[in-house]
Image 1 (tube, helix red, strand yellow):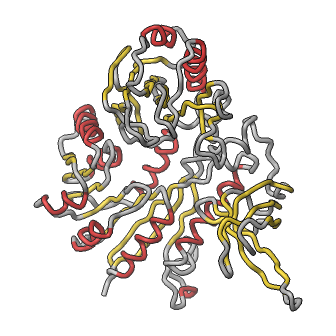
Image 2 (image 1 turned 90 degrees about the vertical axis):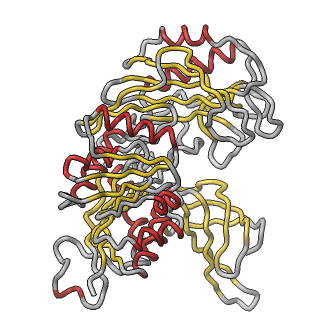
Image 3 (image 1 turned 180 degrees about the vertical axis):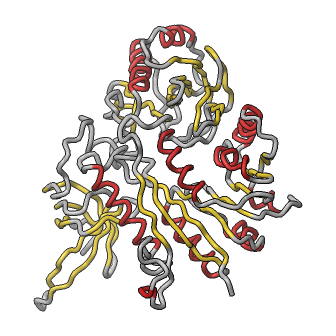
Length: 479
């Protein structure tokens, strides 16, 4: 296969994250048949697709999806979103939910089994079937209570669907850095999101406010951030703009307050962001209406959530996630627990009542402040939250943990931080991962340094998409 070549093939499997593997037969001048494999982003097992070769290697090439020529036999659902297949947000709406779960389970196990040999079910763990394999118990994949309208946070982008076209507000077109599709029909967010989105977009269109162009760095409108509490219905919206033009946003604030929402708009913020990167961040934040936080409840605890607080984006799914994590945690009486990469301290506060002390470490200072406020709100006096990089904080803190909880960002744990974590020598750790490729890499390091994964499960926090959460219980090997 050569760069630029157009090919067709049937997707054999899809590896995480969303990498379709397509065998392609090639006949040599001598008449020999060789099988090459192409890796193409996107697709569903069983689909026949056309693709072009981006990078050519001897046995494996990278391709770009051009067209789905034939649906997969697995695709038996009618996608409810009219922009499915065009929008880059959802990939699995055409699959029955059971097939989505099976696909994610298969992807995770394929990665983990490269580190740990074939898993044992609960029924055969510890039996004569063990042979010389390394056993672990796989507890299955747990579904999300809501498979649509589940997201409690979205960052929508301003732009246009075609160059110099009408202003749009929504999500990136599939495989496009520039083209933005309107997301007023999005099915994975509550309808309050789409009402706010439509109102803001229409207002900005009417007043001809220009969007920020990534290539020239000119324009005003950048993002619309919306968060909604599932338990209380409280909504926080934030308009992210550049400082290139002075605009009175109070009329838009008044307009948003009149919307017939199912919940309640409790705050509208104006965030100024003059960074060159396409990220949602704040150089300056102004409250145009209400307050800059709302209250959410998970498993009986209350949490104050602000615009940039880390908080699981599927509230009801988070209750499943943390409930399963708690089942892996036992015998914490009189023990000190380190919750590393603790965010707003959700899991730290959930286990605090059964632990001697919980110390949470998080690099985002705003999240740490929120964690401290939340602990006070929940009347928990044995939680301490430290702002800083895990690597540096572990060097500075004098306390030693008896148990460690790890919930790192997508890229996993820094190698130097991993060494410090291993050197504590705790008997058990819990690792919660949103990216199984990073988890597999870190598990290989732990396995090589005296630790073994005892149990694992998955929680589908992101229905209709390619993403999935993994929880593992890690135990120190006995000599």
